[in-house]
Image (cartoon, rainbow, N blue to C red):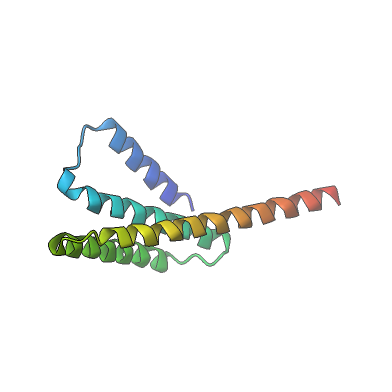
Length: 119
């Protein structure tokens, strides 16, 4: 459960401490990769809280999301259309849905634990 958080933390620390700069030509690809990673991370957290987490689904979902989103961005660049915005929109909607579900699950658990303590 904590492995995705540790990976995210290591990635953020490496990004902040190194002087690496992403060229402007690749910024849309990087934004999609970050959104795909966050979508997969929050989907994994939600699945873990719902006790339906499967490692294979988690990993294949991550790579499938990145490949599809990068493919859309690549195709959009060659067609002269911002197709990567479709992926940004889809990942954004899924992120908010997953966060809402995580919040509901945690609130339900908290409410139940308070009710059990007061009973």
